[in-house]
Image: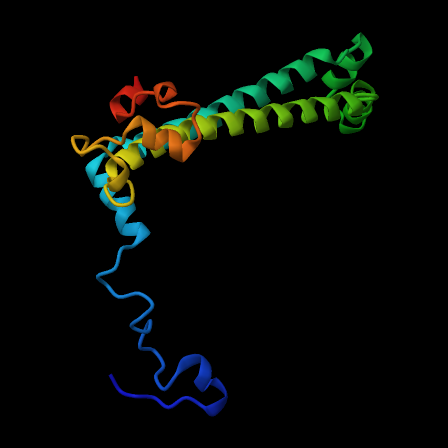
Length: 188
């Protein structure tokens, strides 16, 4: 690669070369990468991606259903008089606007309370779904990795993380309180 000289002002930032990529101490190709480790875990356990997508899509579906229920309950709480129905049936924009204004008069407070309740409910649902979903994924990932946990595992436990290791890592009360650690048992 041709050496390009950099003006003196930028020399401390870029060195003598521009366009050569990362310097050698930062990221050699043979060092571990989180991306490589993640794709290696997916090659080893392909259901891990399906499990992650499943809990996220289940939350999305539940959120849509809760929002649809809230809108249905709000619309059900509105009262429509016979005059409002007649004005809406005239197909005149001015009369329809007048009828809609009369129908939604005083409903702002109900909308705000409904929005507050739905957002709090979705926040709690997201926190619990994320905790359970990520715990299941992390159990699988911890059991797949043999790097940092190898010295904490018993000698005969090569592919599965022990209960005491998970309890120490996640703060369970005792090793007997830990759940089964295989990914297939988490999914059932």
